[in-house]
Amino acid sequence: MASLTLKNVKKIYPFNGDDAKKKKKKGEPEKKTNLQITDKGVVAVQEFNLEIADKEFIVLVGPSGCGKSTTLRMIAGLEEISEGELYIGDRLVNDVAPKDRDIAMVFQNYALYPHMTVYENMAFALKLRHAPKDEIDKKVKEAAEILDITQYLGRKPKALSGGQRQRVAIGRAIVRAPQVMLMDEPLSNLDAKLRNQMRAEIIKLRERINTTFIYVTHDQTEAMTLGDRIVIMKDGFIQQIGTPQEVFNHPYNLFVATFIGTPQMNMFDNAKLIKVDGKYAVQLDKITVTLSDEKQAALAKNNVAEQDVVLGVRPEHIELAPGIEGKVDVSEMMGSSVHLHVTSMGRDVVLVVSTMNMTGAEVAALSNGSTVNFTFPGHVCHLFNKETGINLEA
Image (cartoon, rainbow, N blue to C red; front, side, top):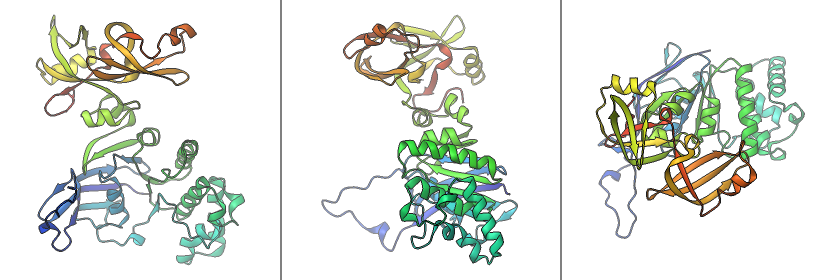
């Protein structure tokens, strides 16, 4: 199999003809973009640096237009690399044709041949290589067994469900035993239940085939459950690289903090970082919370001064207890928890309250229009610089 190295990889889409000189027509809405525009064109991917270990599962995640699919297509050879170097193993592949890179790609829209059976779709790439018939038959049947689609080998794609078609597309890729498996939002066309099932199938598949995976998604749940490491992107830039636990527990900046986690992290821009008896504490509204020893050490190491900060607290880390008062606008019963949308300090605050140890009367009391009081412990606080948005512990 193979490791991958991307060194200062950049993608610039050049202007077409006189695009750079064209003026906005009267009445035409202004196109908004956060991507950098240079004399050479629009920069879709900026200085992308990443080392991927052999057999590692890497997930590129971010909002639409952040450059994740463009990066994947550069690895596949479907997009030309404008600047930088791409290595698969020890081989520089910038100018190597896609068919010679020993990669396989699974697309969002399955891309199956409608006139071919499942068997023929899966065998097609091997036939192009002039592989022996018995080898083709063996590999197709092995892949079909792994993906539980043996019973569908004689059918054509139109006779299959979305989940079955996606299994066929994955099977077509794995019969080639590629060094690198690329997946571009393969589950986005499936319903929620099927997505959950297919996520589990991909995890099982990863354990059964020895290959390196690079997976693109805009769904942070997929990223958190599938990836060994996650690469979070925005506007062509890498925001943070880390394990799912690292990016959840230690987000590098405000964007990562609000992008990772459902419901989204609460942000309070009226908080202050202060020192009480030589220890760091955060002050919000009427409460002062002393930070944990781990956070004390990180802030002291960075020599962080007292200042106004943006305080982040995840909804599931907020506790119902005497502290800050709020009025419940919406109460959503989710089974084992209730999600409260609360107006407090002039803003919307979301609380996720476990109902496991609550009586029916206590749950019923958390209704629309009721008043609640909440606080949070010091070890769950995330503190961000108000100007740069960077985590003060980073």
